[in-house]
Length: 219
Image 1 (cartoon, rainbow, N blue to C red):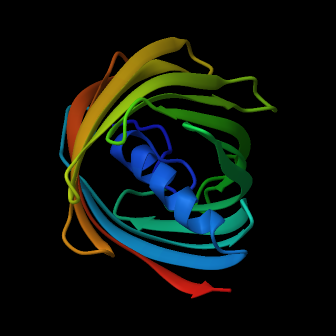
Image 2 (cartoon, rainbow, N blue to C red):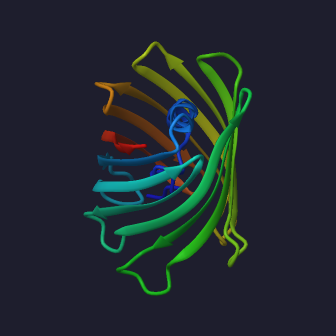
Image 3 (cartoon, one colour):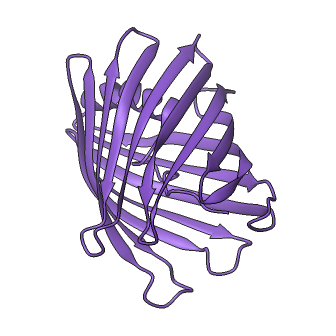
């Protein structure tokens, strides 16, 4: 089972990316904000490996568009525990939202597996409920990278749907992958999501997620 790392709060795809546009609008109204959240996730079994369960959480400080945070995950898969440190800047220009960031991925149970990655996420709101975008990532040390096209639809106040397709280069060749997902906002802070992943380099699988996100501080 393989997955590009998009589960941290700064690297969001599809419906989450569309929600990010709304999130940045709210954040821009405050000079200083502190956000936090946690998620329970379950990945279905496929031919590449057994089912996977994990618990992740993040803490993020935002100041007038600039942000920094930490995201960590513990999982039942050996060697897959992870800690991400990240910084970035996000904002809007008319209907266009943007997010430029740098992530450093740490795998405490694996030797010499840590690496850094630069990212740029662009999203354009065609309407109040539908957006298209792109995500570009590059790893300076290895030269590996990926590029994706995204589309997202907000259906009412509680439902969101999205799809993405792209190419990923992890050093052993370039392969295509795509995903489609939906989310339901149980409350202002709690959401339930289901995603389907497929790619040329791995078998398809589903991910079920129960997430909680909140604002700890605004000034």
